[in-house]
Image (cartoon, rainbow, N blue to C red; front, side):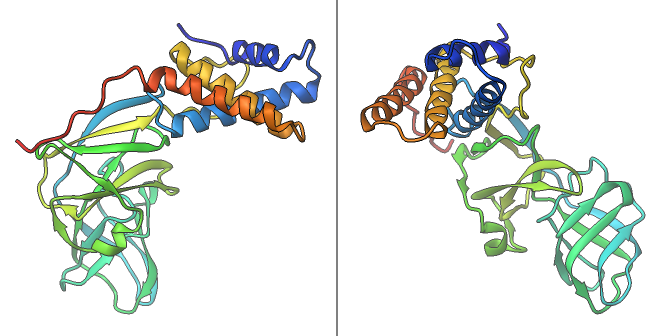
Length: 272
């Protein structure tokens, strides 16, 4: 059953011992709850995450429409909207030179290179698509390669480390494309096989909630959110006694453990 943020605000107000909240207190309570929701979701608490799968794509050829010497952008004639091309992907031009994409703007069919290129790029380019689009901006907690039945390691610098290498991905990193307003995950090395399935565990991202917005999560997760928000409110309200601070933090851990300790231990993954 969906829970209105206003209901969480009321419960938090009760725990804080506030009878009638002033306008400032009501605003701070809402901010504390939104901050708590973000923290609990990013911690990967069971019940606050969702799972889905995505499939890798093959390389794709694009025809250069325009690129001038000593410029850092080029346009293509092909439609690139929805084609799964993201910053961090790379391409080879007609001479075999490799370039990593700095930005992608689908509406104008523009690929940014980051640094100006002295010689005009012409003809056909072959794009290696290492990115998989995410359904929202929530933190990606786990990535599993289904065919090999192995988990990938998170490595935020792996695109630079692996650069233009292809093979079986062993690492992933999450990014956001401003030009496309989309969250995505890059796989490294870039997949050499199209059609492979990857399974994702991602936090259930929610944008900043208003009073009338629903937040549909199990009661243990809601408890953790409210108690985390209470700890935030206490911190914002000025100095608190060491005992009160310790009790608050212990309550946060206890509520989080309601769900975390209720599941069975993760089974080891084995190759087929």
